[in-house]
Picture 1 (spheres, rainbow, N blue to C red):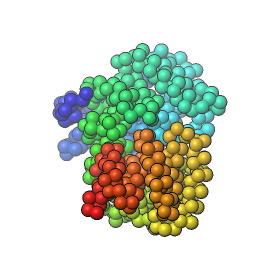
Picture 2 (picture 1 turned 90 degrees about the horizontal axis):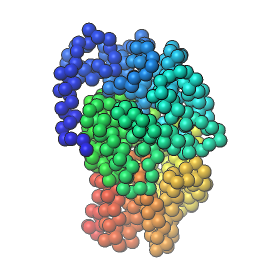
Picture 3 (picture 1 turned 90 degrees about the vertical axis):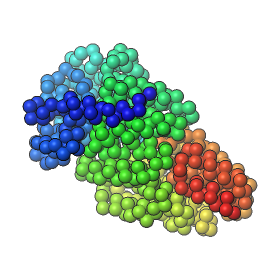
Picture 4 (picture 1 turned 60 degrees about the vertical axis):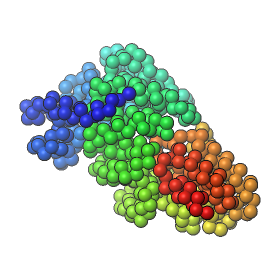
Length: 533
């Protein structure tokens, strides 16, 4: 367990250990001193984001990343660049890591771990996006190059672990390859139990293969305890703190994650994901003001890191969480304003998190405020540059909102049309994600069907079907890409019970929803209505 006050104490210890910036080469190990000196008003010759003239001064462009000391058999400049790249991997700033490793594997082709780093920058193990065939081919070429070079045994182990993910990718299913990668990292950890990055990557691997249906989150707890050991001795390690927050991003363990969450920005005050990731915990705890302020900082920082000419996915990912927080405080006008401001930053990366946020933000704004007619008229397939055919489970969000809005505003024909599309999208989602996204789409279509039945006067059938939808949704924890369900099926059950005059049962449904999403405005307002009737 992480001791109370540990993160306040390390600020003083870092300052006491700092040496002059002018007497030593600027390297990753001195970043904590740099960040703290700026915050205390001391002068420094290097400013984060100040120009991009010298491409070799990587840290100048990227700002403070934390402390990584991953020793490899390469020359000093390559070693320093490699540490930067690994820090970016730990922060899940994959686009920036890809750019860095691409450059350095060309500049230092004999440094095998640069090729390893490039292959790992293409693999996003905790994210819901699927790696493209082109990226798989590039990653495989890079890891094959790394494997062909003579390196120490420890480096061979890391290279082999990455190779497990790319091996036979044309014929072997991705879940099987991910498990092989995770098993390989377990082996590295056992072989090098004091290797900080071996521990961090093993912790990440445990989270990646953890069961989505384990309501005790036992694997997450073990990973968190393992990573806590790093934080005791290496409080500035980005992987340890980042993966710790992921470990505690669930209803059971969220309170344990509060302290590391509030320390992350001290490690990397200019990294968008470091500013966003703590809000996973704030959302779990219903701390909406913090969720709003931290995501506003994250979105602003993300605009500094475009990817291949497009706005970073970290920007709109932060906005989704920010809008969610504003809606919980009843700030609907502010939520709309934030969404409208995002239009100025197209195009964005054509990725799963971007597609998720762009489909969900307008749906949330309508549904959370019970603007049913507005929800029934939501546009679909926008923006058009997103490959929506690749994301049927996300397209379903728009049709869920349209169908629910239509059913609850009396336009039953429109609701039936939306339901028909949802049925088609469910079939497509089943082919992509039968154990996670498809069940969630199934819950959405059951909810729309339930409200159609309710509108038709078939109330008992409607209530039974809405309960089924809520049970399905509640059986699966939320994915890290989302702050929560677009509109919880359990809340919809509460609404239906309320309209049917079953006031006590309605309160129980809303209270059950609050156990998963504490301090949610919709649930609290539902309870209030049930008590007043």
